[in-house]
Image 1 (cartoon, rainbow, N blue to C red):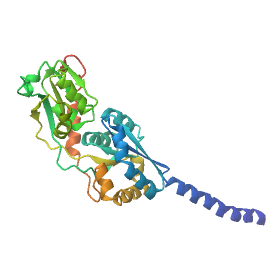
Image 2: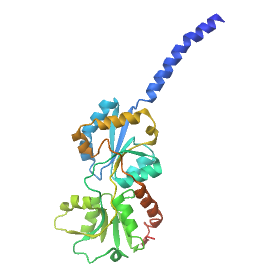
Image 3: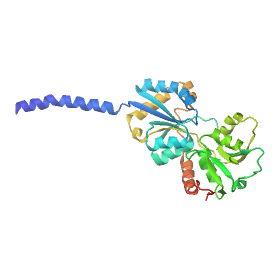
Image 4: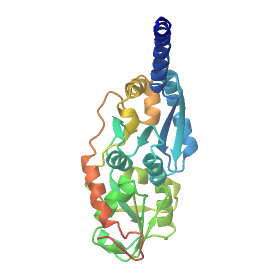
Length: 285
């Protein structure tokens, strides 16, 4: 009996050590995977995030990986599988990730002005209003884009289009307009200003502009990390990054993330409108 008690007393500290080690391992993030929408500029995204990757790696003592997605559709696939620990998300993607995949916004992206969704045509186009797009071919962004998909579909409600084409990037949508593959295309006003210089000889005109301000994007954290000690460590690491690093990847620390309630409502309203959006013709009602 004495030897058995001695054995148990001897074993207890060892078991406690194993439990402590296991607990430490469970609170240590071996790899931090960051997702970002690159719109075809993956190499540029890798360069922009290089300093932040190094900073987070040092602060969290973990391997940091960046995974650029071409567009919102590819990003949604990763979010639905919860393959990304952090997401640098544009507003539409953030709204879906929060409402459908339980990601949580922790910091806002840094945008100088609130984005506006616009529908664009060639300057020489006879179209003068949204109604003139009836029975015409229109280009939209991917599902998940606030300015390229959700707001324009909401504004096109009631029309039947001959066809809807989905551009992988805003630049592709402008190219389709230039080449007359579509009569009009949807993107953000900022994207129009950014890319229009890439189409010399073609002038674009804003046919319609949505009046609702689009919230800024956000940094999201996946559900399994929301209540873990890693959340506070990640926030602290993001906060201590240099101003230049924050500016390079466009985020603000020590500020509450935007409210996505209205954006989430827009997403929900658009879903039934877009049920037949891939048909030819495409009735949007």
